[in-house]
Image 1 (cartoon, chains in turn blue, green):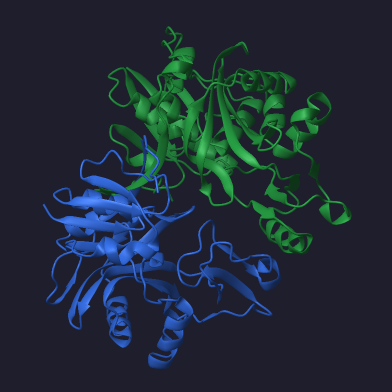
Image 2 (tube, one colour; image 1 turned 135 degrees about the vertical axis):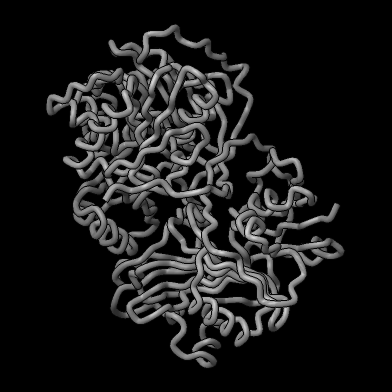
Length: 271
Length: 333
């Protein structure tokens, strides 16, 4: 039986991973002491800190980071978008680290998703938001999109990419952002743009690209080096995100999913 | 077989759905205005889309149609908006041919609004009421931190904890943009969140009360619980009964959210919600099936046996698990 280590298992994607790979031993690793998933037959849980990541992911079949906190490299959105603006001008909704002086803005986490409900509004109305989660704060022009699409996958090498394109029908924002409902779609323009961006960054590993459909065409609003809770959907569509990639393979359209509220008992993880 | 309709398919509705699944005597209908609401996709549920309860005329018309078409016997609203919509409809003379609780309009008017409830209790039960300010800009001596929150929402929507005076204008401006003047500034009570869910019968007599507390909250700053356990707090149950009585009494399910002060141990009332609480399935996990009690009171059947505190040993954590579905339910244009 192969072993998957899920790093940052407090994230919504952790149980998605465990449910998608019932034949694997899945180790949930987190620095939070209460986690969902203790009832799943293939799940074990370990409490650890992100600094222990190299040890935990050594000599396992698959290490899957579910939160950028558990990745040593710097994937700050501000730096990624700065690079993309040089390489592919106009593809992103720009972000800035400095506090804005006019207009409508959304406050985001720079190194990882800022927990809790999204905060947006006139620049004066977001003046009280502080970086209590140490994720770094960035400001992005508020945009009321016609739709939100995420591209989730893993890029192994140039030309070896597994991914799916998901129309986000509903998200819920708590400590983590919950992908409440979505459906895989065909979107040739988004697929092409996403592959261009991954190539430009020469990104390796898991990714989630967040696209907004705007009157000015699709705009990239974030890039995170982690997957979302879509492992079962992708496997149903014939795409195994943990498997070896040799070509570009896309999840077929028409697969629908929801996030189902589940109640289970827990035992606190001890340090 | 009874046709039972649960209005809204999330939060406390999940307790009803999980409690009634597999009962051959219940055909469960679930409604929601959100076609992606998880309760609509639960096994053995007959799903229906309804307009939002705030769209009063459309909601009433669609609800009446559904009750007739589906031959509904029992109606249970489970969201704040549905409870409010149904109570206002009853107040306007609605007489549906279904079994349902009919609490007084006046009691709901007080209990269903944080600002009115706090004002109502300020003279009757002052020790449990956190200090509140409706015009914070005029108060020079606000004891920070304070909580800025809407008066008629629940689930942590629109809430900000303000730690310094300098941050108050932005928080107030943001909430005004969303809720107009329907907000309040409240004393911040440090400590854990407790919930008491209660069920009153048609005559306003308390049938059951169950206390719970949170180990983990939905938001990093607090809010509703997403992990917790049951507690044996008889004094808190008495306080809840006092609050309900002070508001004129209640009929049906209701829950009260409290903060227990971390230093003094005193309980402070945060809000009342005229339905079971979102994570009331915890009580069902521990042998107190509140949905069964609600259904028995509505149908006149014998009340189910409930467990006692020594048996309340199971805790809970709420997860959201990816589940594939075949198709989305249809939304009426």
